[in-house]
Image (tube, rainbow, N blue to C red; front, side, top):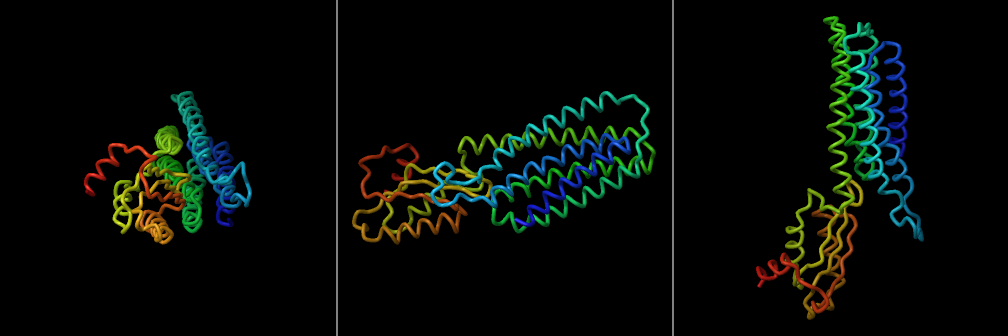
Length: 294
């Protein structure tokens, strides 16, 4: 919690510094960097909310608390990045061909500070990211957000070393392109999660085979694996058990949960054990697996 609060405060402070530096120095690259870096703050705020507001007992309307706030933040980030990229490109086009006098030293100094702050935030979020999915997502956002100040640093160095004022516009345009690329990645992530897509790092067939290899388990069916929040995946499934192993169902359920959590890092496991297949319909994949087992 403390690391998240400090990180958010650093983002706000460095964003203000970039805006002030961009206005004073006349640098579009710094202003663009401020807009791009603001997306990290948009990711940190819901991570802080989710980390400190787990659903209390009896919370009927929000049984998961605010754990999915980061998904909303990802969508907000995409919208912010669109707006930032559009503004940068329009402003760069308007300034193209004009005589500019960007203070390269001030640009470079503020950009270096911003770059250092982003690396500090990456280090500070290492521990929270291991405990909270939202913090993990925020930490992932620090890597693309580092590219903004890196582009501004490059622009400042070019102006200082070669006096090429157009480097400021080039740096701003580069930041706009980076923002658009990051937007595509964010939207793909949001759509995949909202559609209940299977996490890329989980092999569902291998998970099923692993559980079906347990003594007493005949077959898994109606299997669903999805992401609740980044770093927090869920499994819901029905498991057909040999009726002769009915007395072992409690211990079998514990073993299934252990496999899902320890081998596949699935935190939320809901499994229904059954001794008859009367009330369910086989899909082709289930039938294929059953055929192999026979």
